[in-house]
Image 1: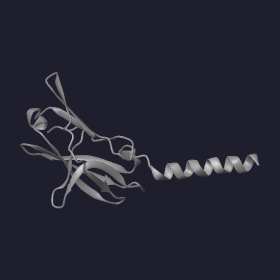
Image 2: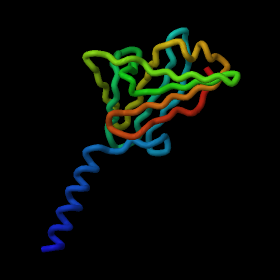
Image 3: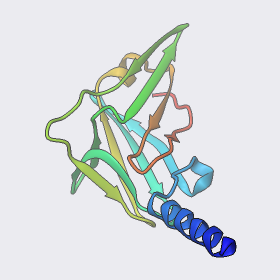
Image 4: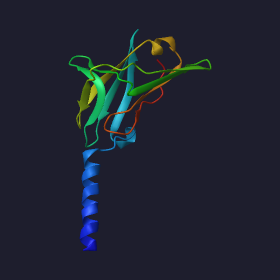
Length: 141
């Protein structure tokens, strides 16, 4: 009886883990890379090589990728000893985008932070709704 009870606990734990795959760092099969900066947009590429789907707050645009919002990302830039953090405001109603296993998409971060810190150092942290944190490498806009 005890073995049956323990087996049931292990089975439930396995199901719970499968429902919410942990999205790890770049070494976990997901890459978040800086691409470029324009006057008002920083462009990144998210490549999902993990087995699961990544769900993020954002609006999928067919030609340009996904516009990030809802405060599920954090960007920090530093230059000449000064630093600044940036999060976009919340949208109502919320929109969500999914990046399936094997998919690569462009992510767009709106704002002028990277322009104001041109030749400084920045990095982006993305907090997917499926768990974990994704970080870009530090980049110079």
